Amino acid sequence: MTACERVSGELVRVMYGEADAASMSPELAAHLSGCERCAAGLRETRGLLDELETALRPPAASESALRRIRAALDSRPRSIPIAGAARKFAILRPVWSMAAAALLLLAWRASVWPVAEISTPAPVVLNTAESAAVAEALAMLYVEDSSDVRLEYAAERIDSLREQLGESGRALPWTADDDWDLPRPTSG
Amino acid sequence: MLTSADRELLDGLVREMGPRLAGYLRHSFGRRVDVDEVVAETFCRAAGNIAALRRAERKDLYLLRVARNLCLDSFRRKPVELVSDERLEAARGDDDAPEMMVDEERRTALLAAVAELPDSQREIVVLRMSAGLTFEEIADLLKMPLGTALSRMHVAVQRLRERLLNDEESQKPRRAGVRTKSV
Ligand SMILES: [Zn+2]
Image (cartoon, rainbow over the protein chains, first blue to last red):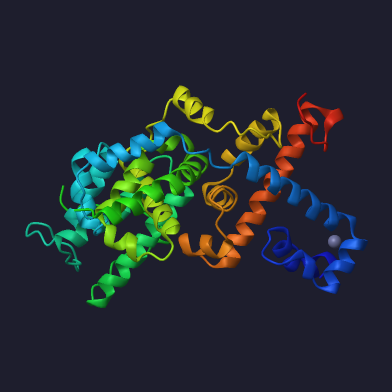
């Protein structure tokens, strides 16, 4: 381990204000006075953070934006928000325009719903709400332009669904880490 | 039904958190969301579940969480709908800060570099530098260990530093490394 590596943990905390620069360890202080590379890293990072703070500073509240929010508050119907995936799904389903998502939903339904004419080896029986929640989480993995944030979110959803289903002895056959092939319908 | 106290609470939050939410959304999700619409809807959701808002110890984090979930949901709903450039420009026009620590050129380069960061890094940079959250709050909001939030921030910022240095070197070799101000 080099001298730079030895102090890097504390240096990073100091850089981002998680540790107080005024009370840094003697080891780090000594290193910074002898190592121009680390000292420049700290200096330049601090400078960049100041610039970022200015560049990203939220705009002052504009009257028109505030009016828009207040108007929305006055006029929109209020529903209990985010009251479970099933409810959200029920709301969103009519506006889904993505063929892939719709196909996926059908495929998933066909593979997990206990429909008589479909034979799956050991179907995981889900109620409507659970089925919708799983389809919703899966669909998020399949939209184009997948972003890290969305994938993480979908993985979180799937993990929590697995947990929830596991509590009642129903093992979802996939995990968020699986290679996500579309579940295939077992009938034509 | 909202009581007058609820109304007052919401009104205060609209004023205080509206711009912060807008800044977070604009810089984190850019053109992928209609920022004003998400902000308005965030407050409507909060009004619809006013008990939860009242209960929330940190109302700013609560609202950020609602806004974030709305965005993630909207990606699924309309993944490729973009806000027009004109609209984005109009939105940008709002935030002409009177004092300019960085010149406009540099600011544009910074914002472009931030926009190019991977989602998972950019969001942390924005939550820290724009929404002003601590790393502990970021870790809580994004459900990750504090160390992960800090290290992603570090990776992101070093990437920005490198990127901006390269930009300067390729465009204006004589000004490399020197922060310039427009006259
Ligand atoms: Zn060093």
